[in-house]
Every structure is written in structure tokens, then in C-alpha cells.
Image (tube, rainbow, N blue to C red; front, side):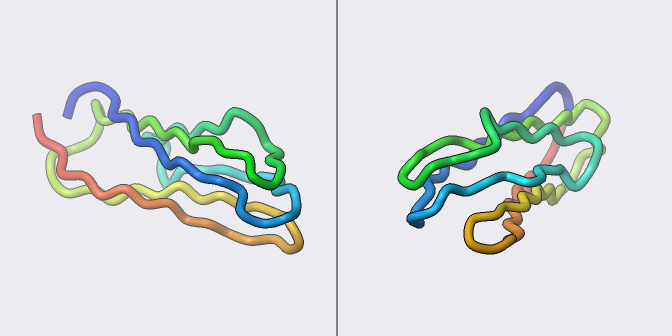
Length: 88
């Protein structure tokens, strides 16, 4: 595969407490996850953006994950997944 692949995960804070993003990490070095900030107020919307650096990846089916660790009233782990079929 050649180049970068972009994926977006829109979200909205549905609860009545602010949410802090404690950690955001990709499942491998070929992923670059991005959030515009680390604290969201109730009702705020944003997008988790993910760049997959596909140049070094072999062809075939691939599964990627981004893990977010958040805190509002308690610490919570959220896993976002992308399944791709890469080809040249």
C-alpha cells in the first residue's frame, strides 16, 4: 500500500460532566491518532482523527485500533477499530 489513509470518528459528550482524555494511543507505530484538545464539556462535539501510514504495510486484511482512556465520573477505556483491505 502507498501513502496515508485517514479515518475519522465523530463523537459528542452525552453526559452531564466534563470528560478528560487521559491517553490516546494507536495499536502500532503506523498509526497517528489526533484529538484537538484533552478536555470536553457536556454537549461538545469533536472528531478523533486517525492517520494510517500504509506505505510500510503489506497487502491484505488489516485491523487497527485506537485506545482512549477517559475520565468523567470514573476512568473508562474506549477502543475504536478500523478494518482495511490494503492493496497496491
